[in-house]
Image (cartoon, rainbow, N blue to C red; front, side, top):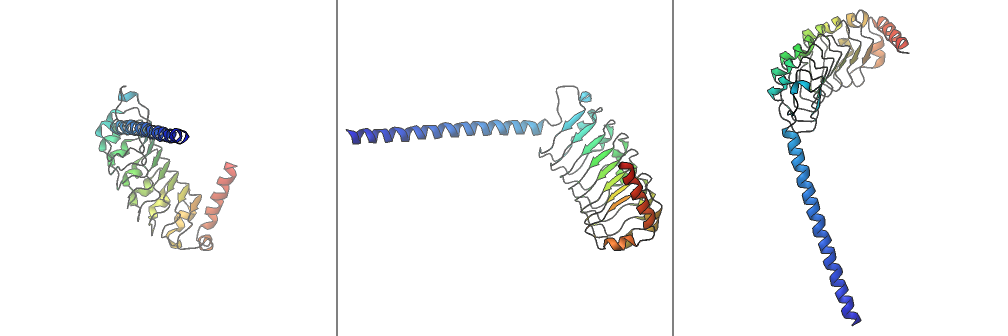
Length: 254
């Protein structure tokens, strides 16, 4: 009797475990389907809203596997912040220029190689983040934005800067981790540029012209990981004027 009861108990325990496993897998399957459905809905409706699109001011559609931005973006006329990081976007439509109130645009970790010229119509844009894309040249359209404060193009494949860079309104330009071998001399003409980030490029010390060092408003240049040493930088013509601007800016901040 004892052996039989023990055997029956083992059978019952085994059956119970099997039932628990079945229930668990059903729950996991159901949860997975729900999650996938929700994710698919999120991807498909990133630019859809039950409200009037002109009422939307902030949109974050990051990590959505988006390959493009629909032309319906033009309807979001009062949007101030558009964040589309970590997608697979290859191009931005000209209609982006109709988002007249856009202040911040983030498109990091996509597949962009250029920007539409209509982006110059974003007169209120102050910050644009384009890091970790596939740019090989600095987008000319950025040089035409009158109120842009910060342009982040770090971690791209940029090899050169356009002559139009001298028209840039930026206070800070981030070009860390690119493939720059030279700077366009016109960068010294940027009237508001104070911070220039050039870490980990292919620059030699000769690219820093006397005009840039002596007469420009630039007061902080980051240059770690290039083909020259800090001592060489300190020996450049105009370095004393650059150092004075740097010190004055530090004192102002403190």
